[in-house]
Image (cartoon, rainbow, N blue to C red):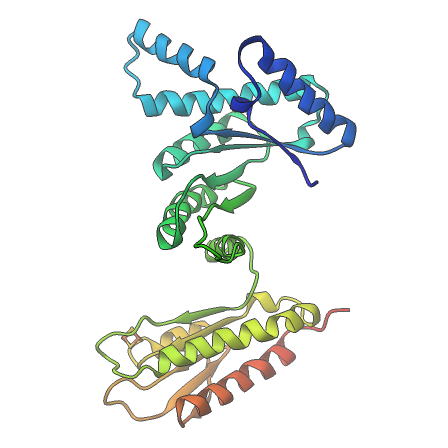
Length: 303
Ligand code: SF4
């Protein structure tokens, strides 16, 4: 058991809530486990919500229901943190989350929360949904917050397809952190999307083969080479952006667009290293060999 999650909205109502919350904190204190105080928009403390709704009406404050829900989530998290500290937990044992299903509301709530507590914050858009929708909605909210320095741990909550791979959530989080330059997990491949300047699918095939090559080699590279996660590769479709992106990467290849000479300059550390020719399979074999040799020579062996 890594840590205990306590949802303040689910530990009872009225006079029973605080004692039951305290009982869980006591278990965590006894076991020396951290807790995550996980407030959720779908199971908010109803007593707190009702009192804030009434206050809004009685004092004619003009707040929207979304604003009141957000305010209550932050209040619930802060009050619960105080209670957990009163129960004997230390600040180092407490992580807070306030998950919501709307990216805009999530951003506002976490900005508010971050300005009012120094506890570590766990980020996540709850009920983000399936596939592309879940990925985009989660990333849109979390990337704004992470770029502002808000958030210490993250989860991308994806609804898997029946029989789907639960690890997609982990891959998504890694890509998000790497995209924002916060942490590198594996070499990245910049690949052009393709456009009217190329009718070939070679850049797509090569980009895929390079990704597969990295996936296959990364377990060994990670154990042997210091810093290999930072490697940047580029696979580009024509001369318009190919040389520029390739020079900006550690290793890049610029494939010929429509009407261009059938040559593929390869750039290493910003300089033209060689020129490749051949079928897609031959290019893949030659290019991945260059990548493998680069990794061996560039990254120091781990002790
Ligand atoms: S590199 Fe060339 S083929 Fe690829 S998107 Fe840019 S212009 Fe189009």
